Image (cartoon, rainbow, N blue to C red; front, top):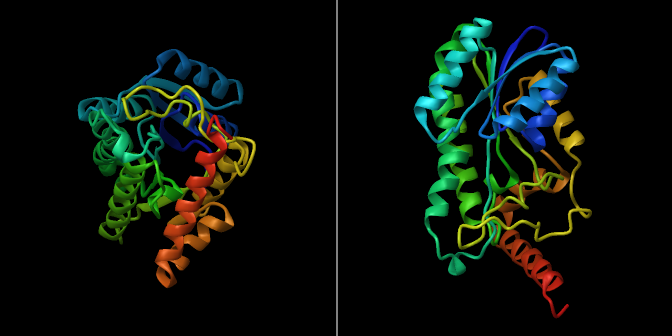
Length: 274
């Protein structure tokens, strides 16, 4: 896929992976339609993209509302006349053991942003993507491949996302539309600082050491762009991530034990008694 003069819609473009991805795509000459809830931060991303030589517009959007997603698509068509790619990147997280959850509405919010937001945007964009024989991209997570302790809400939303786009890929065979699911591991963004706790409050601080075992945003974006250029069906980041599906087939209990051990070690390191 050549990005020059291609119209790309990107949700979650105000920070983290989305912001950096927008800038790289602008450098490659894309026409960008950027969406997020934070309009001020979104305008900053737009300015950075324009400074890199791309064309970009901001469309403040809350993807939990179907009508907002429809407006986003209509804004792209009104400005650029076509849609060549939709990148579903908007996402939020939650970090808490399920038995400690006191506010179950957080599960609803996570599912609406991470899963249904992608469904709404995709539904509105699909006729235009079929016309351009474009590309659908879902920024999922390795959490969409396996269970991760303290991440029940987030993991569930990413499993839903994975299942939806895997199924849609089959339905779209022969249409010219390709579907790419990208599964990063831990990336150096502030998503864990902005994650919800069991009471529905923002954590404000990441519960893990972000300097260890964390991929840089730049490397993550480089891999995403490479996968888009090749119009791959799936891209798993890190050797561990690529190994998980195979190990689960052979020894699923081992994967569970490794995940439980990692969570236990992390909890011990973060204990005030440590």
